[in-house]
Structure formats: C-alpha cells, structure tokens
Length: 426
Image (cartoon, rainbow, N blue to C red; front, side):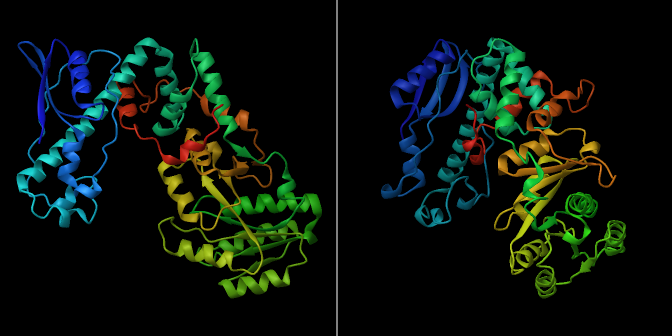
C-alpha cells in the first residue's frame, strides 16, 4: 500500500503536492502541523480500491475537490480505533464483500473503516470551508439561506437553490430569484374546472386528524352551489371513528345530499355503480397513520373500485417536512391526482409543505384555513403562496438559525436528494 507524506509551508501548498503526485481522488489520512509547516499523509484511491474489492471489480472512489477557496487551519483528528466490527459494518460494502475479503486481516479492516470515516470528515470540512469563504465574499447568501431555513424549507432544497442562483448584487435580488424559482416549480390549480365542471369520482385521503371530513363538506358545498344537490353524491368509508358518519350525514342533510356508507371494496363497487349518473362523487376515507399497513389496502380498494377514483391527498400544514414526506410516500400508490393543504391558519411556517409539494411534483388543488363551511377553502396563486411563506418575520424564534449554524447545515447536505435534479431553475 502506497502511503506518502507531503510537507509544505501551508495546507494549500500541501494539497497541491498531493494532487500533483496522486491525482484529485487521493484520500487524506492525516493533516497536522509540523516544524516545517503542514504535514499531510495521503494514499491513492486505487490502493484503497484494491483492498476493498477483487481486481476485476474494483470500487471507483468519488472525486473530491482539492481546491479550497482559502487556507484552512491545520487539524489533527485521528479517528478512534474501531473494534469488534464485522466486514458488513464498513460503510459502502455490499453483502458479497465479506466473501471477497475473508482472508483480510482484522487490522486492515479496521484501517479501512478509519479511512472512510476520515474521508467523510474531510468532505464535511471542505464543504464548511467553501461555504465560509463564499459567505465572506457574498454575505447576502448566508442571509438567504437563513431565510429559507427559517421559512421551513429543507436544507437540501435550500442549498440546491443557492448553488444554482446566478450572481446577484444584494439580498433583495437574490430573494426575488429564489421566489421566482420556487413559484415556477409549484403546480397549482388555477380554476375549478378540474373538479367542479369536469366532475368525476374524488377520494380525499390522508392521516388521522388532517381535516378530510370538513374538507369534503367544503367541496360538497361548492359542487351544490355550482350544479345543484342532485348532481352530487357523498360516500364515507370511515366506520372506525365514533360519529364520523354522523358528522358527514349532518353536512349532507344541510346540503340536501344523501350520504352512503361503505365498508369494503365490494360495497364501494356497488355504491359507485348505483351512483354512476351523478356528476360528482366525493369519498371521505378513514384516516390512518402513514406507517399503518392498512394504507396500502385502502389505496388498493380505491384503485379496484371499477371506475377511476381520483385521489386527493390532504396535507396538514402544521406537520414537519419529514412527516409530510412520509405521508406522500405512503399514500402515493399508483399516483396521486393532487393535494389539498389543510390547517394553513394554524401553521407557523409554510416552507415545509411547499418543499414537499415541489419535491414530489404534487399539484395543489385547494388550501383550507379554517373550519367554516364552505368559506375556508381557497384556490391559491403560487406567487402569493411563496411570498406568504417568507412574509412572517420570526427574529425572536428559538428556531432562528445563526451564522455559526449555517456552515454545519450546508456541510451536512453535500449530497442533494436525487429528486431535486429536475427542478426548473432557469
């Protein structure tokens, strides 16, 4: 194994020597101050690959950027020895790796683990250095990142936007570009033709307590005002909650619409067959935890109803972005028609739900901001929606990001999620 030592007056010069001798994909083993300046121990990536895979199937290490924008302070952080680790515990090894390396000494396995840990640490340090340098040169970028994070947008999307943002003179220009980019990637229903005029069968789905029944009543009231009570039918599959059917029945009685209760796929098929002459059919489904296996059964029931059931996912604006992302993945099934954002009036931030809609290419049909039927259900303008996400000021919030926090956030999101690659940022 070819481990080489490089000594130079400073870290920049030492990294240049490493790059010239071993290439841009070399791995740094140590970095410390010595009497002559800075000493770096490095190993070529091919030598590492030869340790972790057979000759005919060697792992290619990702290429690193060895051009730090400014000289970092020399850091010496030897990794703690790793004991009692099996080959499976080494990050990035496949299940077949133990068989290929069955004869490798334990010391070599421990060293491989340490090398990978140091490589990950170095990548994070370089990302922090790059961000700090750019922040000093363009301080408005740090403020823009803080605005995005405080508004509820994820670190991954925030960094992706800033990396693709063109050169701007100040924070105002940068914020204008960010709002425009977010607006371009939000899909919203501009008029109610897709629901009220076209008609069809719509099922409101989502977790418990998200407001499906109230939203169903709001949609029903709009349909009745547009086409009359005889054009609408209501179906509920919620036989679990006490009073769930009664709540929808009361709304139906006020609107002059019959409410039908179904228990399974067979009942649903029969009900939809009997109601096929109706212009619009709204289905209020039972709410379930997104991690419940019955979510998949509900999706299958709606997909096998014999007619096209357009599923609208209700997203609670007060939920965290991670929770909302879980909900979308669980209820996705063969594809969602769109979403309805609920409890907008209760949400302290809006970036979380906008982030999830952008990531998952979900079309926003309506937004609900209260309990009144049918007043608190609105079509949304995407530019105004994005503007509102940044409008509320939260300087005194305990969740406000400080400058020293931003570098850590950026370094932890070096690998942006794959789904962000298709965003329209031009």
